[in-house]
Image (cartoon, rainbow, N blue to C red; front, side):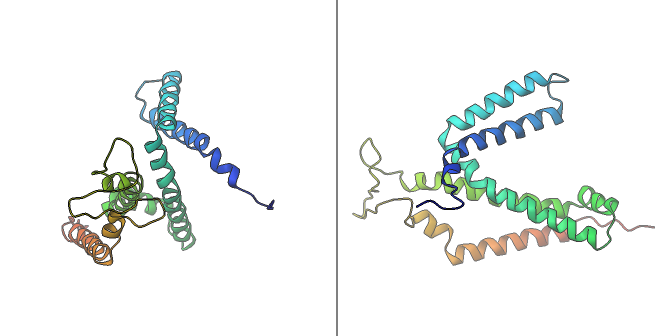
Length: 195
């Protein structure tokens, strides 16, 4: 049945979008860093090769496909926070000074990006952690262990890794560790008293 907005075709060409994204990010980083001087051709060639390597590699493609929406949500939320702060009357100078001089904000951003990267790595390579003891030369989807327990591993079912990582006690412990991290960072930060 035809729908008014059928986006199933976009799933087939998402590889092209990821390749363009990788090309743009690598090219922008090379140009911004000035690693190859004024030569834009070398930067473009290296960015094109990096994009081709990412598109050919299925795990890298799946990793970027998993983290891109979350990073985009993080950027959009950050934009709206900055927009709201500017609406309250805070000057651009104050915002720039808080980002450059205050490590708390950068630490929060780094923690969120690290959590997204860890989520992406677990999403892509987490299934391989459960399949370490597979029998035979091909992947049959069964896990064998010495205790006569085998479980079928498929994309839709919960795996042992998912059950461990997303258990409420483990998630609670991670929240307490992140709160402790920010507490230690806040307490140990050097305070400059203006004279």
